[in-house]
Length: 324
Ligand code: AVI
Image 1: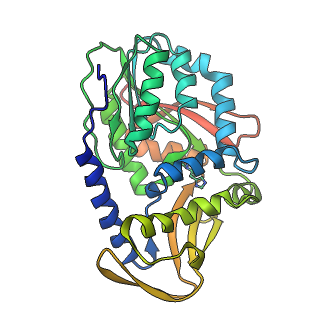
Image 2: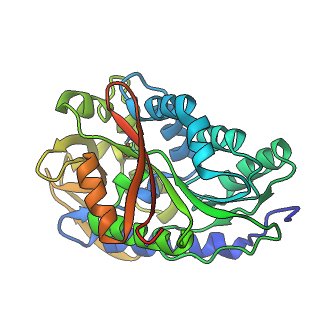
């Protein structure tokens, strides 16, 4: 087991170079884009945690409610001595719930782009579960990953992907991600994933346009990062938060609208912003169970069990490989 962080500073530098490259690539596209994974530096993660507690943002508390109600049943389906791989490990409430309910889990591999968050979560879990081998992996999970080798034996692999983060992928990316999980779980493993369900437009739109403006701050934080980390002369006050439900694509779209025309140098290149121009910063897909089942079937995964809240706002879905 690791006694301290196995990650060197070079990973941090690499991540900064990737940030600069991808921001520039995105801002040269039409329409301009900034990938939603860049919300989550320390400040962004803090704002997201605040979003999760807002009255309008129903997904987090609804999913936690589902887990609290059904985890005994979910854990019984998973069985003892599982190896759990969790993507985007977040602040750990759902992880804690899962690990507390499972029967003697063997290995826990949290995968997250933020190594600071990972290490904090890992050390808490090592204390709470002395028999659990915790192997954090600081990596962008939108690209294929190589798992750290565990010393402990395990019965089956379960990929845990709560939070409806799968909805933040483009449809093709979601398919690729599901394909990658089929390789990780093999024939006997399971994928336990949280998905946000299609519901009435006002409920969905309110969740991304909260009255306190925290989601707006979260969105505008991307501009703060470009200003602070890439030394760009760019002002968040020149942008406006905009979020709406695109029914045809079944997704919330978050945009930043440019309020006044200006141009600025970003990482050595001149970028022109026109008045009224939109930067796409996030998609958050809302699924029907049928649509999610069809997506999973494309990569050979079948829906085995579904747990939902009473209002059917959110679903926790267990999938296995078709050959299982
Ligand atoms: C992380 N993800 C599932 C959130 C969502 O609802 O799509 C991110 C978020 N964006 C704005 N509010 C929350």
